[in-house]
Image (cartoon, rainbow, N blue to C red; front, side):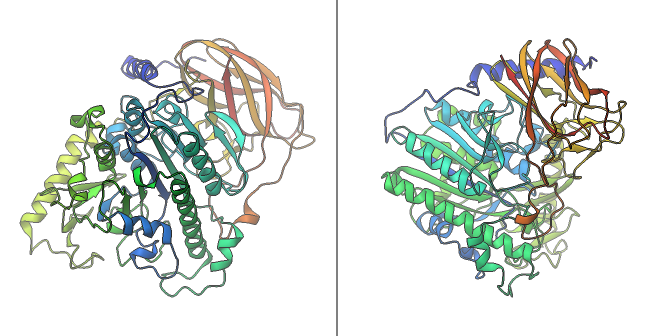
Length: 597
């Protein structure tokens, strides 16, 4: 069945894909650029997931200890008014592009809405073009199918997962440059291992390492060593003394340990002096934890939902202990790091919303009259040096009232007008670029010629009839309750270049329900296969959870090669359609992987 897309959608997509392919490396490529050792500083960026401002001991939380992250602040710069967005993928997009997230069409955290438009240059593109080896290790969350994939956005090396959250943190199914692999141990430790290996491999050339961790995001899993410190601890500082809070704090200590491992490796390799190390969070805390009296948590555009620590250590260029106080944000990190590295010639500064903060790192005054805007799902707030205008138009003096308890619109009417104008300007000049809606019009790219692998997960699929997801949260879900020949699973796709592909199915099916015959339909070739082997493993994750979850549990899905399909170029509907169902069900479906031959 063929899907016809408007030329206004299809042509820009194909052009952007072709242009991006021309400047980006293939998914299987290895770094080929190098620079003289020491000529440019290395860069390591840590980004934690759902960790709030108050989840560090340096910010006043005495119920956990984060000495390594705190050390970065003491030995470098500690930004006091740094802002991100209320949820994961928008913040990541702003860090990666230097632009407010609607400009790259990021409007959701799943099902395609997290993808950054292909005409946006990323920070990895910038550093790679300047001769850096680039690697990302962890949670990507800004697109899965190449060229949205990290390997298509400037990263030579990627190890981790591209979805918004993952269902199990121990020995999970991950990917390495598109190839499905099995993780080793606790995933945060594993991501750090791979980053350390990358640093060792590229110690003689400049490197840009991005470590986007996925904790303390749920599921609430953490190794016993860290859990033992908190499981019986009475929490008096926190709003809730429960296992979710205890596990989040334990996860933060695990993050800190891994930050310390990277710092230690830099010291062993004599690279500390010439390496810029950055640490920040992607949004406020994923729970009502202690947050230094700030109003709001993850998902909120109030101060507590968007204020993040930012620590930058660079012994060669930043005096220890400096505390920049000017408002800044994730959009500023691309120009700031490029400025510190001396590669601003690679930037198109006119296309950025962000501004270099090097002047603050030099002890100079912050940008005068700077306003940062926070946005999520139509809710906007604006922050200047002293005041925040919230989503309802109430003005707060953040110096005197960090908890946003008493509006001061009547006391400072001119300030309110300035921030109201900033919000309106954002609506006109930034939100107007957001083309997406609840039914994302961008098809999923399948079989890009520069990519060996394409992943088509249940997350990105749609289903008919009574087929249902294993959780209301799509990111790491699978499809189940597939019982009728009138039901199907499909993807609205576009194939940039025709080709032959080996198709591998990831599924489970109990004994007695095997024998279902299906067709993978496309606009050209069809592929017929049979679920002929039972595979019925238990759900995984519950025994490792320290607190209950709402996301899906996972299984050890079986990888079954189902044959070779020839896909024609152009827009189309890829659909799994059952022909025969001899048992009670077709299967539980998790993933298709297409490998270009």
